[in-house]
Every structure is written in structure tokens, then in C-alpha cells.
Length: 392
Image 1: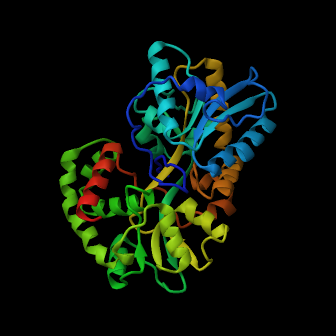
Image 2: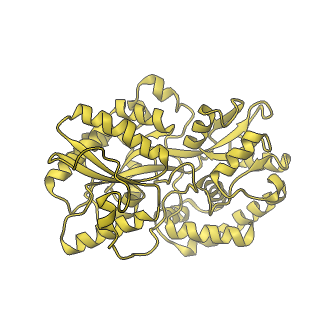
């Protein structure tokens, strides 16, 4: 399965873009220290010798995954080892961690963290700040689709993932669209019944916008914009932007919600019959009763974009710490742990579906093994700007 990293499902979700600038790393000491900076999740009295310090950023669901699932299970399996978690809900702290990682590498010093979770590894990998992932150190990496390593140069590995799906009211929509063309036709035929969020504020909206733009872009040019920055390829967006603009009279109230959650709210209230949502956010809303059971999730062809949460091991840490990090990653990719992660996060697994127990694999029977890659950082920024000027 092809993945790209994403931020927390409850906020303005979008696969991680380039960290905003390179700021001074002076606050990192406070971050690593715990309460004075980011609150450390560890309940241990100081990290013992056999420990790794993990940095993770996300929402409360991500924190619960680490605190209530991963750490307890890992420390039960390896009672001599400890995980010292440094967690924050503030995405701005990713910049401090990235800066510290780059500064420590330049100075030839050890990083403050031994394992990175989320947005930081996706940005640190192309910068050459992480240790390459190989099956020699992490045998379970062989069960991850090779395409997952393409966008991170083989230097980070997925822990879990999600993708953007079409949510619809099954009572009102008996035959949901199967393709992007069908979806566009359905929107025109059912004015006011569809919504997607502003692409600048939510990845589920950005995924729809990118899908329409990609429809009129040669595959080779589209790949350039996904894996790097090719402004010249953006000339192909003109037709897609026209199509998106033509949809405006037919979207709900001719306006666009300011977040992924806004679309969920419209679906829950019955204001719309269809919209784009993240798979994990939609599934969680269904399980929690936030969405009524008549709302179903489906995938269209070609698939909308998907995104992973990556793990990365800094280059500049002691070998003993690297080995502990490898051990954790290999353990986390085992089917039992992947099932636990899927249950906790309502997302997709990092390993290929065929390696999961049959009952769990069946949950993903209708999912693509290769959701679309999102645009790169600079390309995504250009897309949002052009969408705002032409459509929004």
C-alpha cells in the first residue's frame, strides 16, 4: 500500500508539508526535559539504560495509542526496556524537533530523540537526517509495500495509515459513484447534496481537489509534483480548476467547510448526502455514534490520496539506541500489533493486507492497495493558492 504522512484526524488534516522555516533550536532542551516544554508521557522515574526516547505529535487519539496500546504492550514483551515518550498536540513543536535534529547532526552530537513519529521523519528523511531502513535491521519491513518508501528515500517506515474515502447516506444514495467521473456527474445532478472542505484547512478536501487536477495532468508530470517541485507542470491544472469552479454552484450552500470535521458535521446533521472524509476519522465517527449508521464509506477509482504516519531513526544516535529503535519498529509491524493499532486508531495498517489475520484483512477488502500520493509541500501550497483564487 502506498502511503504518505498525515497529521491528526480531528484537526486540519493534510499530509505533512515542509516544516515552516528553520528556527533556533534553543527550546529543544525544554521539550526533552518534560513539563517545562512538552509534557513527557513517561510514568517512569527517569529513563533506564535499556530505553529509547520517542517524540510524537498528534491529537489525543495518537497519544492514547502510545500510552495505552504501544508502550504497555511493548514493555510487557520486553520488560527490561523502557520507552520514554515526549508527546505534544502542538504541530509547531515539530519545527523545534526538526531543527534540533539538523543542528545536532551538523555538530556531530547525538540527537535528543531516538525514535521520531509523525510529521518529522517525513521531512527529515529527504534531508538525509535519518538512518536508512533495511530488512537486515528490521525484517518486518519486507511486509510493507515497497512504494511506501519512495517518498522518504527509504529512510523512514510507516507505523499506520489512512486514506480519503467517499462518505454517503446509504438510505438516500442507493448507487454511490464508483469513479471520479461518476462523482463529478453526481454532484451536478444533485445540487446542494455534496461538500468537501477548503483544501487549505483539511486533507480530505485537498484530496478531492488534487484528484480533479490530476485527472487532466499527464501521469509523468503529476508524479513530478508528488515527489518534488515542478512549477512548469502546474500549467496542466487549468482544466481541472475550471471543473472545480463549475462545481461551486452545486456544492452545499456554495461554500466550503473550514475543516475535515466540518464535513462530518454536515453528514451527521443530514444537511448533505455525500462528502469526502478521512477513513480513520469517518470510521471513528461511526463507531462513536457521531455519524448515523446509514452513512457508509467507499472508495472511488482512481483512489483518492492516502497518508501514513512514519517512524524514523536519527542517524546521529548511539548504535545501542538504534538497535532498540529497530527492535521496537520490527515489533510494531508484527500482525498482532498492527491489529491493535487498527482497532485503536480506526486507520489502515502499515503492512500489506495479506499479512493480517483474515478477519482484519476483510475490513479493508474494498480499499485500494495504492491510494494516490499527495502533492509535495511546495506543490500543495501552490494548489491551495490557485484553488482559492479560482474556486474558493
